[in-house]
Image (cartoon, rainbow, N blue to C red; front, top):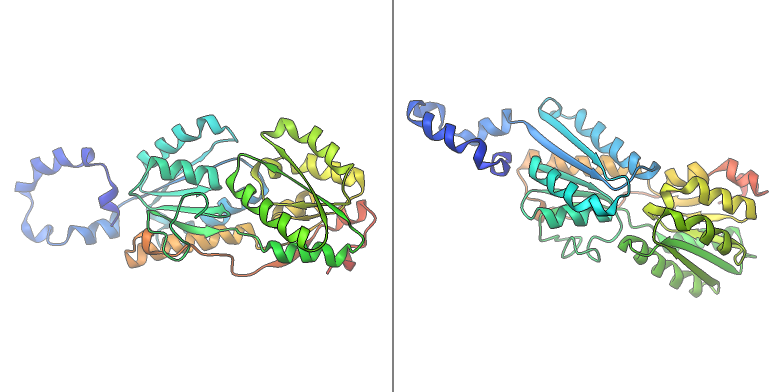
Length: 323
């Protein structure tokens, strides 16, 4: 299967020169030889370094490195470090140099999908692949993109906030307005919060330089923060969490790893598990000679309540009371 992704430049000349010298018995089934012996070049493109995305990468690489394909895998791991202007050129290089592509976060998935329309692209930490233009549907992607979606159980996260903080009247949301995944979550969260009778204050940023001023102004207007999974905010969670703690307000939502770094509580799946789950899909594709277009995009298998005891105590809350 992988041989169809290799560059014709690497094989055409040598093959033409040598074919007449090869015995027919040695080339009866070249596909089997390729499947068993050929190097598997896996290119990874991560948007930015922060706890959730790093956990995805860890789960993905460790699972494949423990698989039967480990000795054949050559890794090409790239991180855009949040540089959106460099993302497309990085995606083009990763796509050109590798057989299987792995995109961590929505912007990198969009960049790789633009750069490559045939090689299999696996995604993780992408909230809404359909809204992002990556797939026709979760059940039938229809293109060369599949993987996992980290769509959060936002209604349940809102219930977690309301259940534990019944006196909260106004809730703040902060996110990067240029990230599709964040916009989708913020819209859903706003609808759920308003349906619960709460007032919502929304502030957006375009980069990390906007966070300190916008977050500081926001916490003065609200009783709690609802955190969506947003790569810009998550990469600065040390700052965001400290501002919330200084204001003495709870933060509910986002991913498990981000909350454990500097948030109060959430209902989340492990982002390392997303990486593991996506790697298992790659293994299944190789084992069964599948096409990415026929592999449904998968959701998390389970969600758990995550509580950061240190954060809770910093704002005067008994962490054991959060249920």
